[in-house]
Length: 263
Image (cartoon, rainbow, N blue to C red; front, side, top):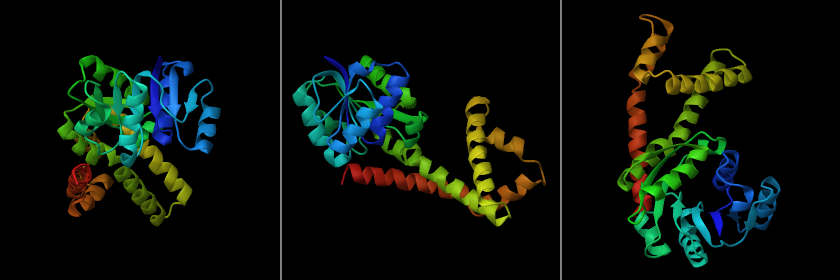
């Protein structure tokens, strides 16, 4: 029996397979990647030598559903028909009760919300267990998601907030990057110089936050001298209610996630 079937050969499905192979989670011969589009199948087959890239699932110990929300029901039916031990779904907005109904009684299901930095192995994901999922099933799902980033556990009713925060979060960060690059250009820097500085500043700041053991408040304070340049810049951001704007953005994205899941 195949160890894992990944249903969906888009960018996230490709990233998952790449991460699992790079982490040594599985050998290529233990994986099946399901993709309907012939040209994409050929492309994936060239990248993942030894992985069975096909049009339909096979019997497996576990399956990952990585398709668009409108295609999830059909994917669940195909996986259930082939036979699988458990399922991890990373399809946005599809509730556990629907997944369980489509897969059939007794199939353990874990639902997760990863984000796009998983494409470079630095994703942030949250996972929620279905009614039949055990501790072992959650650990299995975390092992898969952990191959492309970090994972936390939450109850399903918090996944909409996860979507609004970390799911949509990369877009907020990219908007900040765009604004900072334009600010550098407006201040007289060549665009390529501004882009390089902003990219490294965001990367370095993220690593400092992750590795220093200090919270964002302490790190911000350590950069901000009274009456200095950083204080002047932060004063403008606070006067424009940037902090409130981010809060409202996350709340709006969270509410939209709820609306899409429960129309």
